[in-house]
Length: 124
Image 1 (spheres, rainbow, N blue to C red):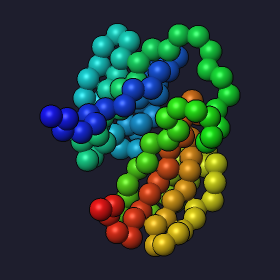
Image 2 (image 1 turned 60 degrees about the horizontal axis):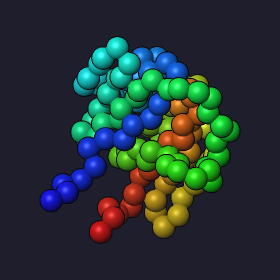
Image 3 (image 1 turned 30 degrees about the horizontal axis):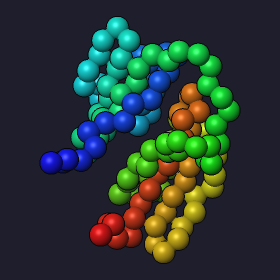
Image 4 (image 1 turned 30 degrees about the vertical axis):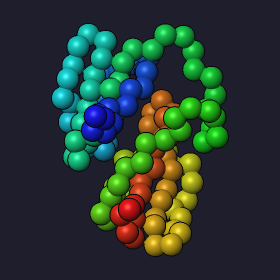
């Protein structure tokens, strides 16, 4: 039986530096480290594996095929948004609201898309 998704992996030319950004900027914690791989955990237990990359990355957009973003669920949208602005995070959109849900897109230092999400109601 499949219990759920344990982690998502992204490749990086500098896994340790990118993992440090997730720790310092988003409050993740390191849960595994090897010579070429870092795994960082969000407060809810979700794990992001950051491993060494090979080759060049083509330009990315929010519509490029493949996994497009990681959604970060927050309780206090305004507080987290302002904290990230204070850390000079690169936002690629302005905050938006639809049906009580609030969202804003941004990137990590390597251009991977993330977004803050505050839901009015949890998904059923």
